[in-house]
Length: 155
Image (cartoon, rainbow, N blue to C red):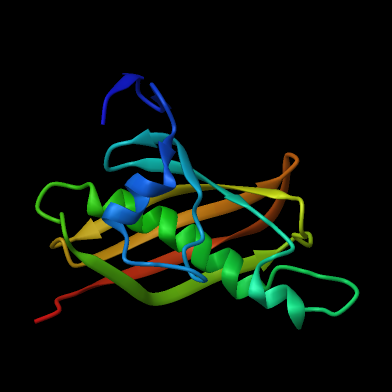
């Protein structure tokens, strides 16, 4: 990935490139674009929230709200993008091993753009990673928390 300077991509990374790195598919592919990327340190992802997503049929009728667990999953997918780009961790899959200090600060609804910033705290033995992240809508924090990942080896 070529960058003009750290943190700014020459061009955003589109969903087609993200899908080459992450196994998630509809309805669980929750990152539409990577806007910023500092290798091994940080990424900023975008999720366009649309009324056509299946969870809005039942959460909540007449007042659609993106489920909090999906906001956290979207942040985790941005974290997964960072991890799959690190040397020696290509073609790896990192699953949730824990979440801490998660808070939901405002609802996320159809028409919103959830901008998720995820930063690496630690990576141990290329198997366990801890990250912190937050998601904003219109500059307001909607979700924040820490995520723990564990590398799964599929045979």
